[in-house]
Length: 317
Image (cartoon, rainbow, N blue to C red; front, side):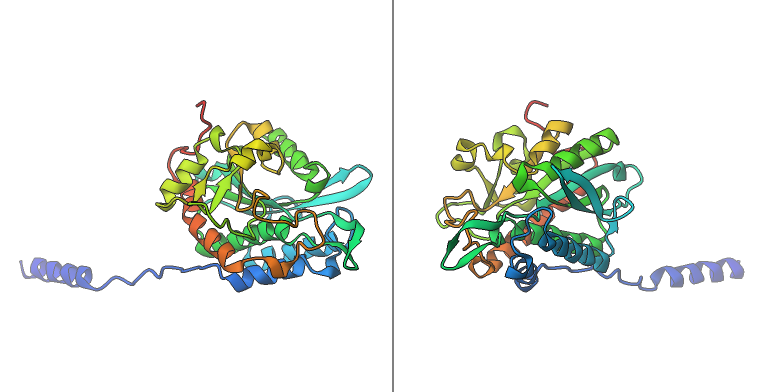
């Protein structure tokens, strides 16, 4: 009996010991880190990042080094997914974070943006002929890099995440068309594709922060707002009028996989006068707005990667 009492007391003592605290990793995207990325990519030194140029080669190396620093692995044998843009050798940059759940990790969420731009403009403006492409689309590229950093530190994605920077978007979505078909042929399970395009300037008189192209095609906007408990995403009449759904790198994934594949943007050209212009410069971007948008959308992407069932759906499902 004494031995039994001693054993019970010992068990109680062990169970009463305070359990070690599990430290929560806090990651916040700061405006200065976004500014650093945009300022580099949109600098004159990269001469507008035209496909096949030395500038886009430098941009790709810069992105690869960010992925290496964060521990984001290449999806293929290297970060570069090579293809031909006519006679030009081109390449997307593709990083990968495997999901933490044995079943859900077979599903992939693609986070994308194009990192190319138009290079030199034919006509000089104030002795400047470089289309630097800060808003279009160094800002979207900075969002993908920031999200790669966030999830590589948090390690809380049950589904796998693919971070893709597309080239030759400005030549007809060639990079995304190539990769979408390639991944379809490889029979991957694509859950959704979230693309970032021109997030460098805010809307001034709307009750939402950003819109998604193809708003009516899926419940993505509705789910992002529910996941973030906010009116973060709204509907843009201008986006629908000009069918921007088909104008960016989300569209080839929709075509190939028929799953929600949409672009998040805070610029439908009504609030930015320098589209494909030499004055699309880094100093015109609102980095506090960008950081706020990215930090606010992170919980939605976390939900996309972690829900037990597929909640992001096409409207006809």
